[in-house]
Length: 169
Image (cartoon, rainbow, N blue to C red; front, side, top):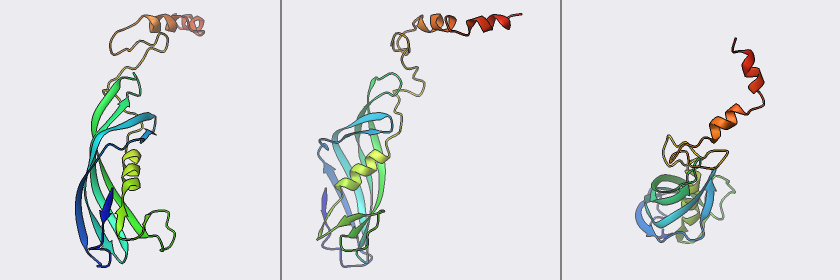
């Protein structure tokens, strides 16, 4: 994801707009919070680069599809995502700032900033539906698909069942 910045690098206040489609980001599988996520297909990026005294501010909107497993029931989910990116790039010879990416030359590589923006904005827990019931802790059945009798039996066999009788009076 490289962009030629020759026309704006030495012009303060210059803006360059860009659009690009990036082939599938191979080998980029990670956990966003509790979810393991794969990026599917192409990623579309639209944005602009603003130059100010050698510092480049890149704002962009990133679109694509992700594949994950539901946090509660482990069902496979494929859904679109849209992420905003607002990152600063400083020349490699400038002061060491932990809040910005570095660039050198006349080509700006935004690959790592795009990947970071995507993964930092993935929800901690991706659900197949907001009311997902998850899996039965006893038998592992998907409670969205069927009810099992395990839960009722296990509630009756708890160690505190003798105390429950004290409050029946």
